[in-house]
Image (cartoon, rainbow, N blue to C red; front, side):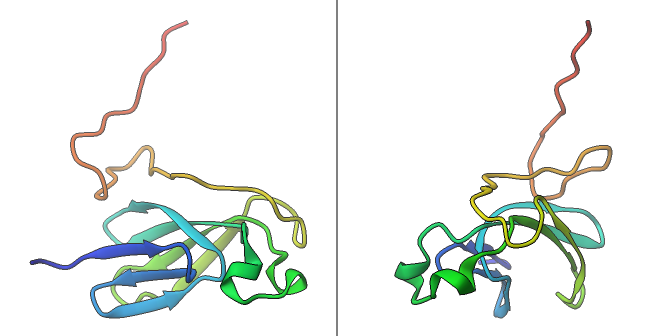
Length: 112
């Protein structure tokens, strides 16, 4: 089996092979470019199930940009203001560049 990539939503982890990066939220959605991973991270939906206090789980949804070579965080794009939760991400995609996380995906072009 080759290298695997997992968004472990319950734990808040992004896993590449045997390396784990904790991203503090429900990891959902992945876009892959030649140099970076872009991981969607939703607000904690059920903090009590994860052993977290409500005040520890109040963070906005975000997209985290990580280096593919080191898995270090390069940038974080917050989808809402800090301390406002309840924004959920279900999937993300790279546009205007090949998303290496997908096979044969082509963007929809609309003509008006």
